[in-house]
Each structure stands twice: as C-alpha cells, then as structure tokens.
Length: 259
Image (tube, rainbow, N blue to C red; front, side, top):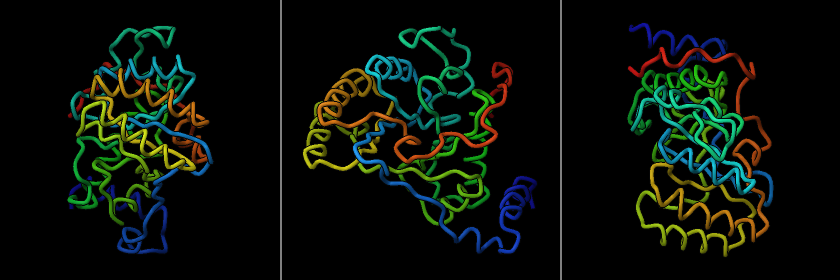
C-alpha cells in the first residue's frame, strides 16, 4: 500500500474508531445547496486564483459586500504564484492572496479540478488535502468549506470531505457565466430573483472579464434592490469560514511550488 493511501485511511480511522473504513466512506457528510439565513445572498466564484479576483474583491469592497472564492491549487495558475504580488493597504488597489481573509473568504475547489466522483478515495483525499494545506500555508487558515468541480459529488466525496471537517457547498443559482454571454447571465439573475427566493447561493467564475466587470456590478445592484444582505457562505449558513486553530503565521509561500 502506498504511503499516501495509508495516511488517507489513518486520518479517517482516528475520527471514528468504532466504524470500519467502508462505514465511514458510505456515510454522507454535510452538503449545502442553499443558505440558511433568510434574505441573505452569498456570491461565490470558482476556479481561481486568477487575475480578475483582485477586481472582484475591489468591486465587492466598494459596494460594502462580501464574497467567497473557491480556489484551486494548480488549475490555470499555481496558487503559490499569487503570493508574489505587491501587497497594498487599500482594497481598491492590488492585493495578494495573503490579504484575502480580510477582503473575502477562501474555500477549497480541489487541487486540479477533476470530477471527484471518478476518483478513488485516496485520490479524492489528496485533491482536498493538498488544497487545504496550500491555503493554510498562504493565509494561515484551513478552509471549512469545499466545492466539488462541476458540482459533482457522491457519498464518498462528502465522506472524505467530512473526514477533513469540510462541508460540501453547491448552489441554488448558476449564472452560467462559463457557458453564456454576460447579457444572458444577467437575464438569469433577473429571472431567478423574480421568483423571490428566500436566499441566494450563486455560482460564478472569476476567470471571465465580463463576470467581474459586467455581471457582478449588475447583480450587486439587483440584490440590494431586492433587500438581500450580501454575505459570505459561512455567514449565510451561520458558521465559521475556517477551522480551528483559527490562525497560524503563514509560511513563506515564495519558497513553495505546485507539484
């Protein structure tokens, strides 16, 4: 048995000594598809860190809003490369991922963005654990939430996430910004909010210029006009964004590379 495989099952075993590995893996963890607090809206973005993350954070800050970013370890960019930018004091200027606990909340979107339901349990664990460790290395905090790529999950995915104390977060609204032009994403926001949903847990992607500069400003105005409070995923669920211990001093991420 490979060392990584042994560590995977060892971590699961220590949490539930009385159960077999199969029992643990067949027990579903918490899967979130909508917010709990009425009249809250949690805007989320997937697939970063990316260049438009800075712009999105600035727009949110100026609007007095918050957001949650589900980042990958090594998808379009190595997550550690985003610690090299110059940090600024103001959210209206460029800042790096080190600043994100203050500007917005960071959560896990796996290391390489695979369909987790196609992987075995050891591979699922590796995808989540590597991302968790990278986030902790950079901001000194471990994420309490993860989002499976494509929204694809099964009992094994949620159980492995639960072994890391991470809840699985999906959405109740998809802007389809990855699939349609900005005007159609806007139309989707209009149509969804016309139904007067109690809460909004919205999926967007930070990898598109129009998502940051066209759709987001419109969505913020629309949500505010409907009386929604723009919060993080943790806030809309009444939870905490990061796991205990709450904070440790980050390592020097410039010495780390994605492998």
